[in-house]
Length: 223
View 1 (cartoon, rainbow, N blue to C red):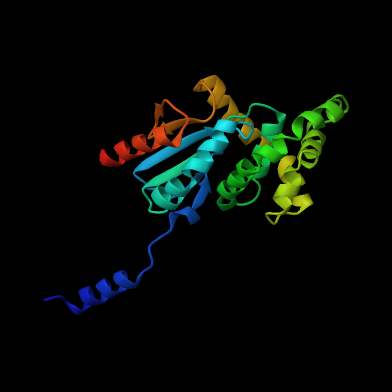
View 2: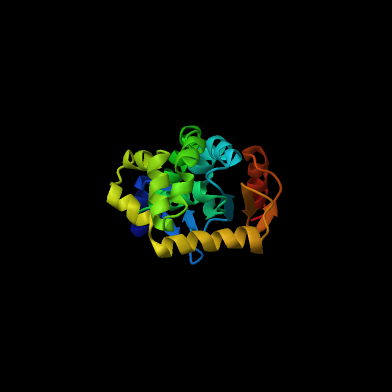
């Protein structure tokens, strides 16, 4: 026969809502933003570039099963590491990381979803403004790029103010973190391109969700 304490405990567990680990995020010592259960059996590291179309395809294909499935259940923690390729990518990376860590993944998804629009403005912007901007300080260049290709407007629609966005773009600590992750990706780990993935520290070959998910399942089964 159950004790009274055990019975009450059981009732509390039945009535408790399951934890949605998507709502948990933190920034690691390396600057990477991690979403999910810190004790998850699987750590999926994604090296990404915002000017990478394959990265956008991966986010689109994986969002539902990865975020609302594996991460939400606490089985997988998703770590985003920047591997910057150009000035436009750098600008997007700084904006994606603007605000609390809990906002980064949502910002990242929104930037990738709108990628055709803002990347479609790059060529004309660079042709018109490139020579003039190249003579300005880096911080002024980043602010001008964000405004000129539409990223500032995109982020304003997500609830940010222009002063907040400009502060994120010109933050030296934020810039240093993104550049340090970029160095680790290209120079130290020597990734072949973006997106690149690690599953529990092991590099996997492929850029699609169809290839990444089996590696996640195998890592979960190994525990």
